[in-house]
Amino acid sequence: MKIAILLSGSGSNLQAFIDKQREGNLDVEIVLALSNNPDAYGLKRARNAGIPVWTEDHRSYPGREEFDQAMLAAIKESGAELIVLAGYMRLLSACFIKAFEGRIVNIHPSLLPSFPGTGAAAAAGNYGVKLTGCTVHFVEEQLDSGPVIIQAALPVPASEETEQTLERIHKLEHRIYPQAVQWLAEGRIEVRGRQVVLTESSRPKAFPCPNNDLSSQWLVYPLLEEGF
Image (tube, rainbow, N blue to C red; front, side, top):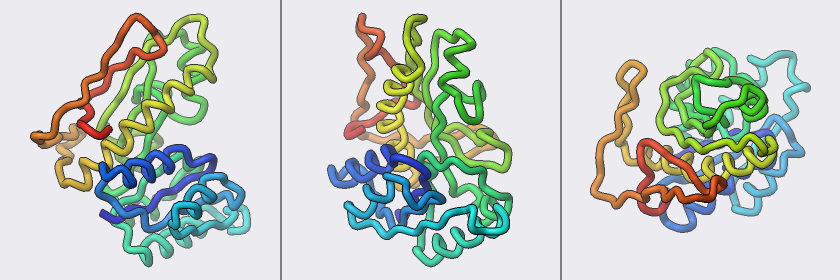
C-alpha cells in the first residue's frame, strides 16, 4: 500500500515507519513526506531514507484551503492510497478530508475522547488521571473525533513530569501506529458506524508484559502482533 506521511516536527513516528518497513514487518511504500515546516527535522529523516519530499511554508499561502489544495495535488500525483498524520500540527480543511475520506489516519497522545487537541499529555497530568496513553484513529472534520483503531494505555505516577510521560507515550506510538497501518495494508479493517472491526489473523500476538516497574507497564487493544 502506498502511503503519504504529513509531519511538522521531528518525525519520530515517520522513523518508526521507516524502521518497520526495513525490518520487513510493514507492507507499505512511503511515496511522499509532506510538511508545512521546511525546517522540520522529519524531512531530513525522509531524505536520508530516499523518500520524496514536498514542503512549503503554509504562511506563504492566502489561506488554509489553498495550502491544503497544494498538498492534495502533490499527494494525488504520488499515487498515495492512505494519508498518515505523524505530528502534523495543523487542522486539515474540509476539502482535504473529503478528498481522502476514510483514508486519513492520525495518532493522538491521549486516550480519546479524553483530552483532544494540543497539549494533551499536560492536560491529562494536570487533571490528575491515573491512566493515559495514545490513540490511532480515522480523521474526520471534527478535531480528534474519528473512529478508534487501536489504543495503548499506561499508568501515570503522581510524581512524574509531563516530559517523562510523553517519552513513554511516544515509545508506544512507535509500536501501535505502524501496527494500525499494517492492518489497513492487509485489508483487515472495517468501519461499522463508530466501531472499527479487525479481522483476525493467524499471526502470533505480542502480549504486553507489565511488571512492577511503572515505567514499563502498558496495555494495548487490539493486541499487537509479532513484529510490532
